[in-house]
Amino acid sequence: MDVRRASERYRGGDPAAGIESWHSLSFGPHYDPDNLRFGAVIACNEEHLGPGAGFDEHPHSHTEIVTWVIAGELTHRDSTGRETVIRPGDVQRLSAASGVRHVERNASRTPLTFLQMWLSPLKPGGEPRYEVVRGIADSTPYALPEAGAMLHVRRLTPGERTAVPAAPYVYIHVTRGTVRLDGEVLTAGDAARLTDEKDAEAVAEGEAEVLMWEMAAV
Picture (cartoon, helix red, strand yellow):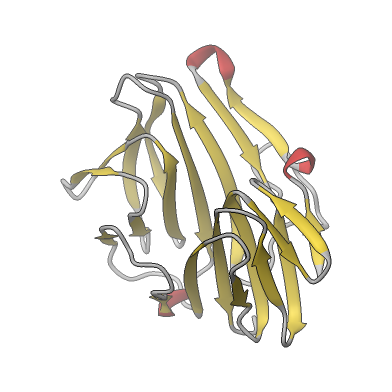
């Protein structure tokens, strides 16, 4: 188990434009050859956008992009003509496939915080796809077969335990609260990377929300 603290992430973004980014893996100008990916996960970015701030239209390809809003509302518009507003509890997924362009913005009057996770597809190419699951229920897995991955969302009550999937790779990110994972205390923004771990479990030390990526061997 490899624990990565929120304070260890790379800082990016453009604070003058109301954009603050925190990167968990090598990303953009923050190149770290020892931290390029974990399993299928190639990026895990926590983004903070002030009111009116956002990312202008930009391209993606050959990437599975999953977005989870922690607080606020995210407005998404892409080159296929879709425009949606994503809120806490929604799972947004954009399969960039052979290529797509999109805009992400905080069109509200309150701050926005969201986690965006990029996964490498098993096969490149194909047609772009877009999906939003509104208000995904606790313990409901979200399958991402294109990347050989499954997302587990857990909202834990104080003292509640949750099993960690037994898989070749598991990426755990705490979005709210505090959990204890095999003796390690993880708070909001902390992550753990587990390889071939079995019988691991997380215990909430208060109200907590945890995202867990279960991934097949690369």
